Image 1 (spheres, rainbow, N blue to C red):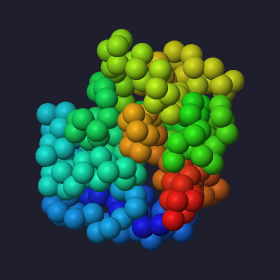
Image 2: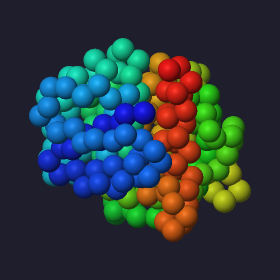
Image 3: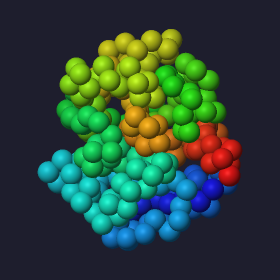
Image 4: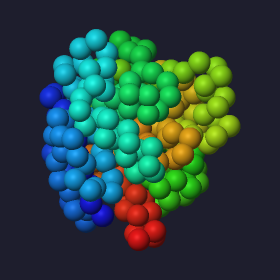
Length: 231
């Protein structure tokens, strides 16, 4: 499976993501934000970082990069897209996913490993996970407090678009389990079609035992297996 990792000015997780994908057997290449082509990739990943210095809002400037028009067309045609941390914020700003990000409730930068419950394991990004499985993956952000209005939240829940939820060690979605204050403990979600996935945790930092967890690999390998199943 061919994957493309998009680089924006200020991205800083592109190498981690590139290395993780190659380690998992992907054919991976970088895509510059000013490119007008996705180079015939099967999977597009917008990595973490601080695109354009997070000026205005996280992802607010990156959404206007040339490559985003092609990513929107790719997503509309059913192509698989993953936005990780800042990549998630860019997808929100671009309207490819619903909702918005606020500052963490503590108004502090957070860097820790969290527990995530898989809420929907029927997607191209979660088919290698069990329903309700708990994943351990790191987070690393200042604006990860997901928000959407009541109507939007109901739609997300009704359509099973919530993919990952912050939970405690017992698997319960308590208020304290979401260190950033995210509404309904939402850590990751998809669009209605299920082919665009945004998440605040960093799965690329959880693909080898030496990193403390291999749970992130399941999300990438799910996409790989989904593609192979239809090829």
